[in-house]
Amino acid sequence: MKVKVIEGCISCGLCTEEYPDLFQMDDGGIARPVSNTVPQGREADAVQAAEDCPVDVIVTEE
Ligand code: SF4
Picture (cartoon, rainbow, N blue to C red):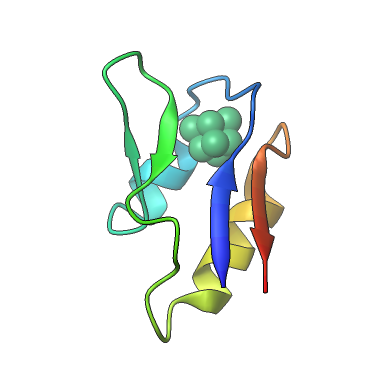
């Protein structure tokens, strides 16, 4: 599974606090995936993060 953060992150911190191994803030305070490929076994959390993002900028794809 791939994951990315598209334009529009409002830096709410939800994904980086809930899943710090999957998302980290970059130097500009914008969330970025730690890896563009979701680690094995973490797919459900990546999908949950995408669902929870208030502005729907986390995108997952198989
Ligand atoms: S949950 Fe969405 S808006 Fe909040 S930091 Fe993560 S990507 Fe940005």
